[in-house]
Image (cartoon, rainbow, N blue to C red; front, top):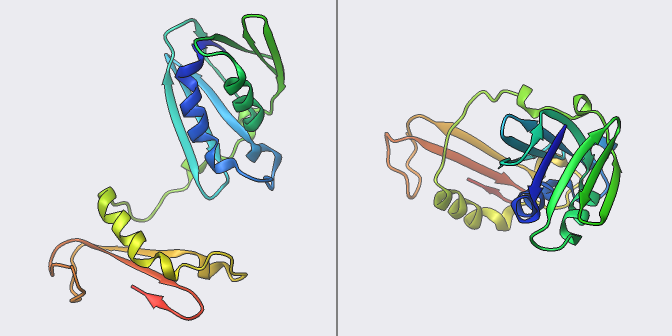
Length: 192
């Protein structure tokens, strides 16, 4: 695997994909980012097994197809520390990822891409799309009842049930149209 890219092209996607990787991971591979060079594209993937973030970046320079995982925090810190406008060369040699820019050289240990958890294998029973404004309104209207640090894991989740037709007369629903039932529970409240 090999690619050349400008610092600014990858900095923001790196920051976004590193988001779910906070704290100390339960497995070493969860502290890593999956880097996949495909034809003309670099795909970055980060996961904590509950959430997965992906970003695709177009590669216009020289590149070779391949994949590996690299420590997310170190990789991001290197990228952030390089000067603006830098052209950065990244190359995988055995189990080391070499990052070069100008007179700077970095060597990072890697783990095999095959060991990275693949959340694509998981298939949901139901898929639906929801406008961002409606999702935001649902969260704002119910966030006061969300349990944040309860020992009972079931009290820290939100239950979503999409329905093809609303039959129950809730406020702000139109009977007969598609709707989503949004249910939250803490020790004292049941909000729907």
